[in-house]
Length: 141
Image 1 (cartoon, one colour):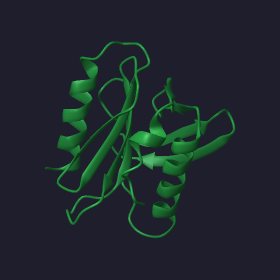
Image 2: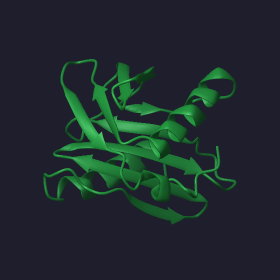
Image 3: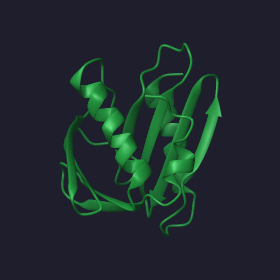
């Protein structure tokens, strides 16, 4: 299954959820872990390839079920900031500095309380990181 198909399937399932800030949930299978949280119609998630599949680990985020292209700004607990270029709302790093940034982002998600994401086409969404440590535990980056 392509990364885009996984994103669309998980986003569709979350859009039917209540619009209040939700708890993190995790789905695992076939060497993949998909941990995600919703806030209204916005979705934030991390996909980790813990197996041998030809799918990269990454972060995805969308304000309304449709990912945006461009620079997304992630501010964790009002103080740690990451900026990443996302394609259709997905950050899939290769090797080197981008992979290190992904590992650092995931670690900050695990330890933080809240993350605010500013979207390149305008708007912002805030997500709870409560429960993210447990949800992201299977991720090995």
